[in-house]
Amino acid sequence: MHSRKRLLIFALIVLGLLVGASTLLFAYKKVYAEKIYPNVFFGEIDLSGKTKKQAVAILKNSFDKIGAQEVKFNANNKEIKATYLDTGLSLDMIEIAEQGYQFGRGGNFVENITHSLQLVYTPYKISGLPYIDEEKFQKFIEVSIKQLNSDPVDASIKVENGEVKLVESSNGQHVSLDNLDSLIIKSALEKIETIALQTSVVNPAISTLDYSAAQSGAEAYLNKEIVFTYNDLTFSPAKKDIGNWLEFYTESGNYKARLDDNYIKTYLNNIASRFEVKKADRQVDYQSGNVIKEGTEGIYLNKDQALADLKNQLEQDKITVTLVVTKQTPNEVKVYPAEGIIPGKFEGKYLDVNLSTQRLCQIEGSAVISCHVISSGKASTPTPEGTFSIGGKDPKRWSRTYGLWMPFWQEFKDGVYGLHELPEWPNGYKEGQNHLGIPVSHGCVRLGIGEAEEVFNWTEIGTPVYIHR
Image (cartoon, rainbow, N blue to C red; front, top):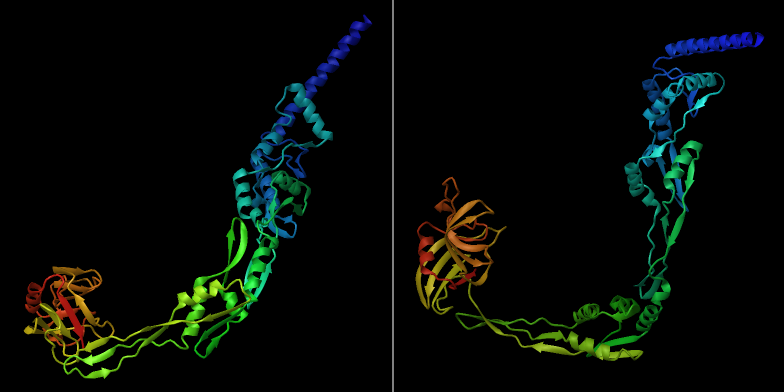
């Protein structure tokens, strides 16, 4: 009897507790409807009593402060700075807020009661860590971390002021990316200001030892005594000059020194200017036969011979080269006077253009067929002088350069210069006849209306064009 009574009392007590707990849980849930229960934290951030939206805003504000902080990345003697946001450090704030909200709600009745009571005494720490956004992280590596890498510098060799100089090589370094994302997360959580990165040495491909043969070869050239002689003239290149002749090259993977033919010829050109004489033709008046100017024999250094003689003695410490010259006899040239027409300059048809008188004459053999007033190039765009020939004809050619038509076009030089009628523009405007007799063109020879067509019909491809003053 007593046992049954005690059992009934215990059952009533348990029932009372359950009813009380249920009532308490109901009231608790009502007070914290749509809110995170009290004593819920993410790290040191208190999310108690916040809605999920408010929790996200708090987390974002806190994380933005962390993201804006700078962290240093050190690789030996090189260092860069970046913010955590630059590195790609991110935080899933929505997931963290959801975790906080579900604590005390996600289980069965007993679990919810247990979790709710637990929060009275012990704070709940939401699990979750920052993570690295892969796209931002790769960009950070490409833009920033690669600044910590350095390429090795190969040794080099040069000749300066007649002295061989070796420039030492230097190692490069390559930063290891192993666990870099983890290091960034750890640094943010533990407030570490500098992240020390592991590096590997990148060795240069060429050291100064690789140039030992080239160095000794170059010094051997520099120590040679070289003398060039011509009549009573003597030329002795200094070490600085010989140094300018040197070049370095590889042969079967080995670096060597040799003399460059072109640089030697440049030196020979310089000394040849002391005695070379430029050939000048003998000028004779075409009409009278009188000598206008006597010719001058040309004297030129045979540079190929001098170079060959030098190279044949390279095994010797002292080299002496006797310079050899070639001579050119002057030609006799008939000079045409500036005034007048000289018929018979060419066999058959040709055009004589006198820039001084602004006249073009059609000549066949020794007979002058017809003459016309022209307009040649102005001073800034002169008509070229010399002997040319008709290279192409076009009844109406378009000039893209000047945007105009050139009737009865006859090209005589480079596809650019030609004979043609006074130009005309697309709107119908035509250059005035009053410009004939005055040099105003861009270099072409302009003829009047009708006369250009006459000359066009008279010439053939290949007809000589002699332009003179």
